[in-house]
Length: 301
Length: 186
Image 1 (cartoon, rainbow over the protein chains, first blue to last red):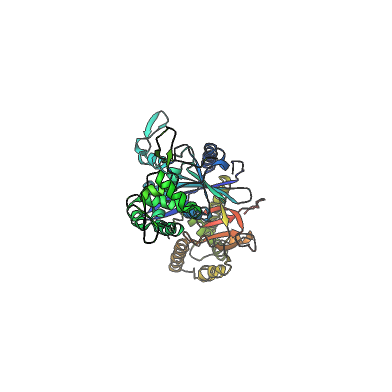
Image 2 (image 1 turned 90 degrees about the vertical axis):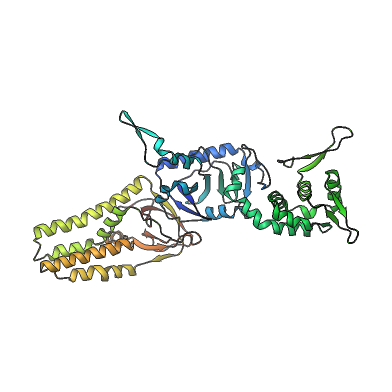
């Protein structure tokens, strides 16, 4: 989607962090604030560039500041954002602004001329909160004198972190998304199931050590979850995996009893990196097979 | 979940505005204790000032586009509230005895109690002015999944489709009046 829609209405809201739950409330605002929010949305789309060419968000990927991404709206990791987008009739509560330390993010909902909710744009409230915390150091010129401003002051950012629509979620700062949608919690709850899926999809490999590694190492759990989410493990050839592991120095031994390949304990992360095309070999120098690892990679087209 | 209602003065004025028929009747009936010279202007002020405040709040909401997009979800018409309004407030206070100073004071205190109860129960949308302008009172269920706070919609429409989307002006945080493209004076 590109920024071509005429928006007839904008609603502003704040989400508060109350213990382990998030409470969102609409905050009434006047047309000048709505203009600022429209400007932020325009800037967000401008920074995202051509949204059709954005790659799908990968939870194991390290993103640079200028790299956008997108998510399908039905992606399980985006459940909370989808619920926020689908939530209607939020009761206004301007009092929520009186506790700036609890503000977690702010959002704006943009409606088209048919009262249809078109997009929801969200921003993690960093600057928004910082200014409110130093308010007694801000000054205001009243007549010809500088006066310390004691009223709460909030500062809008230049753009939003992400934009939710009916089809997808466009993410301007994917690294920040990991905190917004609490990827760590998602990985924790799904990685054990992902380990079982991996074992089912690769029956020729004995991956009993994988479950323990998933429980003890966050990186293993994240990489495994990302791998299973992509859903191409079942299509992989056992022989090609063994060959790739050999090239990438991942130690596999063959069990004579059942004929399965056993992964050397401690080599789980390297095995997953190989499956995830993060550990690979390059043979540009004659006689040298170099093994490389990539923190950030994507499929070339 | 408790949600601050906001607009305390406007809400108080709206409660007083809902008492306008009572002041009309009291002004017509008169009292042996309070001379008409004082009673009639007092009743007029008690009718005009709250109504002016309410109309001003709606006008301000229109001017600054204090609007809300509402998705209609289970709209319930509460015409029976008018009966509650009539029988709990209007009839007893109209039938009260105003012939002695004590009875006038007693009626005044009863009035204050009723205002207090209406204010705290957020019954400030009961207004004869809305009924005259053909507005009906609907309770709309909000999104149950989140906070589930129902709110009041004043609308001239007789029925709504489920999930119908409308725009309404905010009178208070839980009372809205539907916006029509060709707005008639309220």
